[in-house]
Image 1 (tube, helix red, strand yellow):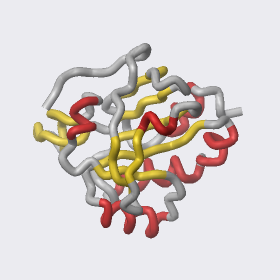
Image 2 (cartoon, one colour):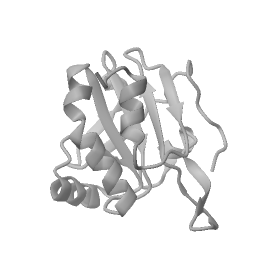
Image 3 (cartoon, helix red, strand yellow):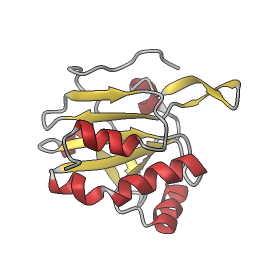
Length: 158
């Protein structure tokens, strides 16, 4: 578990994780494009479904600006495949079962859940530029309304 938080100007830690189809995806392979990398606690839960579908519904505005969207959770590849199928999620979802990547991004740790302190995924989003440098970092975001904020901050809402 780490308390290290990433900030704009930091190089995004590179990693390779399997996507919902079991194919390995390496972050540095996406260089040349901006990437919205978002971490969410668990596939098919209400808040995570809301956030994932919000990214899905706004994917065209991200894509037309040359921005790729990638989601990361601790879920197994098989669950991510069911999540993508169930909700028509047409972007990459990555499986970080041992939460090693989440720890490197400071998105695994203590958080409040229904008034109790638990250890788990901290809903967070990063915008990574075409050179692999973090442009923006949001920690402890709310599922509802967050995608609109990302779009607004990237100048994609008009």
